[in-house]
Image 1 (cartoon, rainbow, N blue to C red):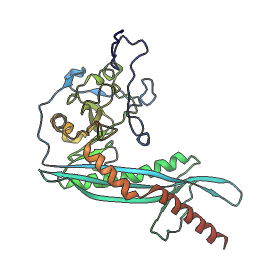
Image 2 (image 1 turned 45 degrees about the vertical axis):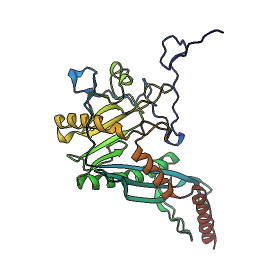
Image 3 (image 1 turned 180 degrees about the vertical axis):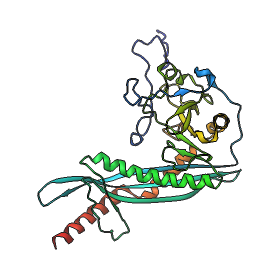
Image 4 (image 1 turned 45 degrees about the horizontal axis):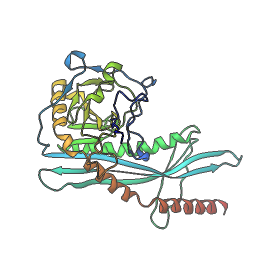
Length: 333
């Protein structure tokens, strides 16, 4: 019997290069999508450790007494078309969004708060079209975007979700909750001094110089990178919230944590250390979440709640079809 040697995903003896398995839900996109030569790369300046890359392992911290996790979901439920009298076809979509929060206070049970949802019919070409309300309670707010690209309509649906997330996050922050927004902070309009942090699970662009970027995967669970100055008055750092398993790619389990610079750099350093100390306690376990450990457990529970609030996608599609039939019947009358 010939013994074989198991090779890890980072085994330098493997001439084909490292292979990792990431069970990220396709609906959310892959966790790591940043190309090294991407035109969207932004080389942010490290502002700790004299500009060198260093890993920080803060001591474990008790979680905040009052912490809120905010997230949103969106779903395209039908593609739409509108044909004008000259025969020109304009594209659109019908979709839904939802947003809300999970509140964790002291040793009490987590609870949902400020959960809201909506539906929209969004057409390209700059002209909104109102669909009639469905008898079973389905309703679509009419919107229009300029140009012919249906991707602009999808982005409008995303803005509706992001605006709802921002409203929830700002309200909770103003009430004194330490608020973790699942996503970047650029949508928060009043963030100077607010107790709010962005938690970004996907990495679409390289944000550090190549020599620093290549070292981010060296972070161990519970370690953060040094702070770097971002655009739009933000500081960021990378944090590995948990061990993704030996099969995972090098960036699995790493999130970018964003904080407003208005509180001052010393306060941001303290906030980053605190976050690195307690956020890993909320990392989801591998056996319960395909996006573990980077998807936090409260966020995963909130997402399930929001998806239920959006309703059955098959019923949503049927309602859109019936509303379109009714509108066409009214137009022909």
